[in-house]
Image (cartoon, rainbow, N blue to C red):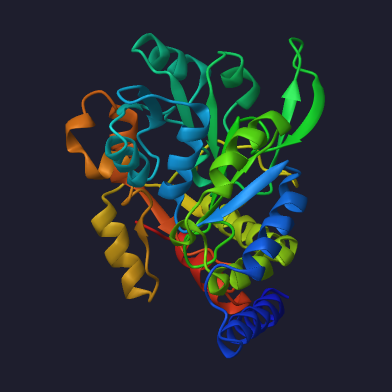
Length: 350
């Protein structure tokens, strides 16, 4: 079943991109608009813009919020380093926060400490598709920009003071603005780029002023949009395949010595990867897997904590997870025989 899914979707992606090339319409145009419409239906947002990179999207979000230079922007140490670099390039100050060691994401308590340090805006990365307690974080009362690049399509269970579920809301609907990356390893990929959207009408009216004045060099080209359109259309099939693979890996790891992140695993979650927290040196595990012809990678090689070692003392949990967490190959295009081979190896990792 997994192999059938991957072959069908791959053909659709190739056809969409080739059509763009044959028509010689590869810059921002009709497909950019079509992608925006699909995103609006997929996320239930009020308005969106498809841009060339997540960093460009962040720039537009901060402009729309009216954030001034020298303002302090909070972010997770396990978030991608482009967040830190973009904030610095806009002459603002990053406030890097450590994560909860069991989930890898931020908590209300951690964010509150960031606010006490002067944090004015929270850039909330939903790392590895693990969704933090969004309602609790939003109750702090600061502007939130959600980054759902690894959690797109998931729902969050909103609960009352008695821990009773009151509603399920799409992730991305909690922030004032939301970035959905379309990079290579994101849940929905266009080979590069991002969509910035406003869940609410009031925020969209502000963002639209910048959208109307956006230069073409900021907009996502149609050749990337073509791939993204197919990815959104096939999201449910891709996600079903990823969940099947995740379940196989999870079962294998139960007999092993390594741990997984604590997370909710139900039909409303999104599976973007399979991170494994190692109890032995990464080098040893990598060499063992390589002998079995399986390539594993550091899960957080491109994170803030990986690029800025001076943050290590104040972000001890993030530093530990950076050094110990591995990505096991998990893609919707893996065949059943490939996933079975990986699952077998997972149970025997040193």
